[in-house]
Length: 189
Image (cartoon, rainbow, N blue to C red; front, side, top):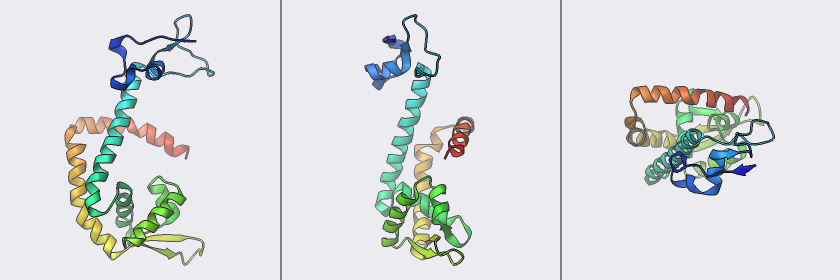
C-alpha cells in the first residue's frame, strides 16, 4: 500500500498536515482504491477526520475549562460528577459499584477518588447492612452544602462554554448524533 498526500483542500486542519494524519485520511492501495478488506485499516475520510478531531478538541477543551472553574472550590470535574450523582439519588447514597458505573470509571479509580473526597469531608463510606462485602458512598452534610454552593457556578460555565454557543436545533442534533455512540459503548462495557 502507498500513502498519497491529500490535496491541501482535503487536509484535516492544523494537525492534519503531517504524514500520520494524512495517512489516516488518504490511505490508498496501488490501484488508487481505498482498502475494503478486514486486514487493512479503514482510514478516516477528510470529513470523518475533521468530525473526530472536533469532537476530541471540544471534549478536552471543555473538560479542561470546567475543571479549572471548579478548582477555586477545591473540586475537579470528576469530584463534581460524584457529588451530583449522590445528590440526585434518594438517601444520597450509592453502592460503590453503581457509582463507578454511573461515572464511567473503574472501581479501583473510584475508590482512590472517594478516599480523597472522604479526606475533604465531602463523602463517607458505609458498609452495606445486607451485604458486608458491599460499600456505599454517602454524601455528607458538607458535601451537600458544597454541591449546593458550586452548582450555580458550574451550570453557568456549562452554559457559557457549551449550551449557549449552540441553537436548540444543534443541541437536538448533537444528542441524536451521540445516542448511537453512547448506546454502542454501553453495550460493550
